[in-house]
Amino acid sequence: MLSDSDFIPLEPFNRLIDITSTQLGITQFSALLALSFRKHIIPQLLPTFSKYHTVGEALGNIDVILSKDFPGSNVWLERKQDKSWFCRRPPFEHSPVLEWGEAFAIIYIIELINALTRKQWHPTNIKLQGRESDIVKSILPKQCRLSIEQGATSVCIPNHMLTTPLSLFSQILRASPTTVEWHTSFTDSVFELLRPYVRERNLSLEEAAELLNFSVRTLQRNLAKEKTSFRKVKENLMFTVACELMEEGHNLTYISNQLGYHDISKFSRAFKRVSGLAPSVYKKSIIALHSQ
Image 1 (cartoon, one colour):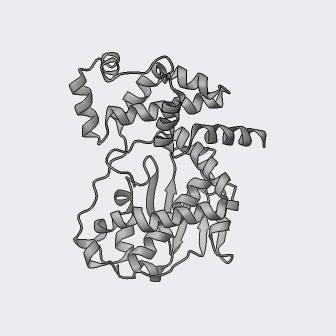
Image 2 (cartoon, rainbow, N blue to C red):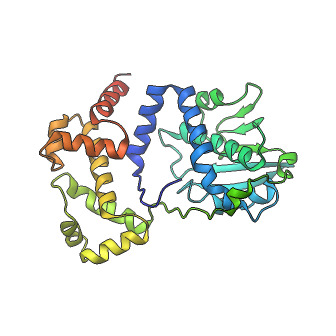
Image 3 (cartoon, rainbow, N blue to C red):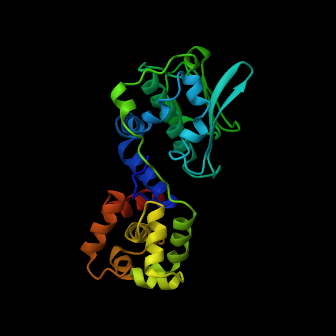
């Protein structure tokens, strides 16, 4: 779940998943995802469930509840042949990180149901959209049945679990739900329209507003409505274009200069602030992945 100021471009985020999972290994990265969901993301979501009484009632509204945590994806509860399935279909069905996307959805729903019921539950029947299943197999009990090349990522929720009452801590329910916004159409448009210019210069707020035919104040106000800022958009533009230039084989000094950083250390700090990785580590990982 994103904080008010978060804005994440998709392509480099997918690359970060590749790099991090390669460096940590599947088991450790999966455990890290589960811990993050359990400790940080799902607790912020729990107040949203205060009006529901059972797991089935809550999951019946899952498309609305999880719209912020699965931006662009379709999520729903489906009933087929006396079985209920939590389903998720991503916007890009042939994404290179589809397998991790499926693992993400499965880990998420397991941790969510465990948090709602305060029980330790694991699914016994799962359908995958893709044909690759190694990552998902590594996070599930051996007795779990897996089907591949299905219409959506689907987790079977047994009937007894659907009728289980929600068991939430009263102090969590008293907390107000966190307001969360993913970047929406205006921010997306600003990001894509400014993207070509970032390769040529270090854009100022005034230059960006002029290119977009807005006043500075209007640009700032519209971004603020979507819980972001020009600084945040600019940082992620830098990050995205830097990743593209690394993929093209350029060295870090060239990339730093191209993006308007005359001091490579400033570029490194800005890159690490967005990604959590030094650009040198990111570049080495790209080289390693390409050499496989």
